[in-house]
Image: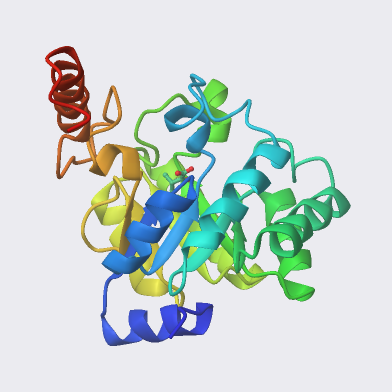
Length: 258
Ligand code: KIV
């Protein structure tokens, strides 16, 4: 059965953790879906892991649509969430509706994600959810604001922690179906998770969130550099290098084609 936003809320209530991974193409999407990922996020981190940019800022909405559609073609069960990239929703509510509408109409994704929890973003979320577009929120470290925040842990002071908690509450009231908590203290993530009726999906936010997300390039050991909170479960860079070297050797000594 395809995963729905309502199912995610039931899983939170039942204490069943929500497995979330990112994907950027058909091939990985097929594998992650068949392996049991509940949510597949076409995150704008693909700007860095698949397109070679140094931040997520340069990726365009058209590029995100292209990758999100490819991911959707590989997915049968998981809920696919398409990230709205930098400057595809911040200008105005109508820009956000247009961009989010394109994600749903042109790719087959079931929801969008956007970053931030200040007033204008909350208003945008309220409009999107009012017209039937499911929205996943994202607070704490928000990489689209890297030039303001850097990549360090957020919510370390009492004031910052209170602001993030208030953003989480406001986004929930505006209708987000789930909330990514990125790189914030475990105790803050736990406080937010306990009081919200919707699931929290943590990345660098400790083990009290309702689900966890990793960038798949990090999980598979494809990334050149790992954030401090990520974990690689295999070293695909090494395995691929070995395969290419074996292929080269076999060509050179006439073993392939056999
Ligand atoms: O872009 C992304 O991959 C993300 C996740 C890290 C949550 O936003």
